[in-house]
Length: 150
Image 1: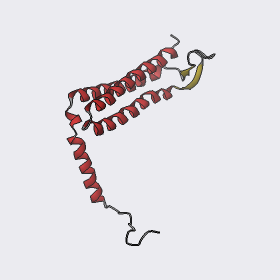
Image 2: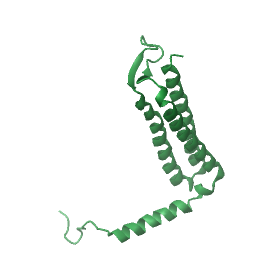
Image 3: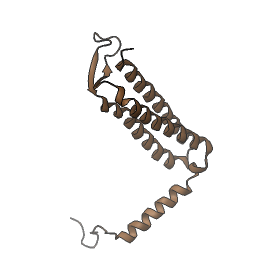
Image 4: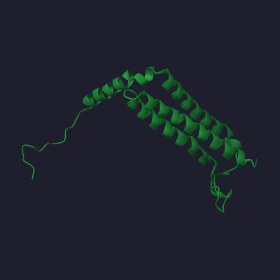
């Protein structure tokens, strides 16, 4: 049993307090040293450009693609080598850059938080986002190339 004097009611904060809190969070993010780190910004710009470029390539090639695309193939060393495992509508191809966007935003948030204490870890997170974007570009281009039977 909890002593009545120790019982705490949940605090409710009004909209003005929330606004002030959000402003403080914004000040912390703007004051973060990551925004003045040129290497970090370069990696971020590279990842964002690759992700936006992937969206653009898919958007531009969408009208020329068949209605259904093979999205996944059997792994190496299995009886189904080269066999199609998953077929989807051509609009399902947008899942590839969406995964890249999720990785990019997650790594961005983590690296902004970590950068103040550990610059190398923040740079590795951003470099990881660039590598993931590159792998997704290759995967999407491969799906598009195989859709035309090349």
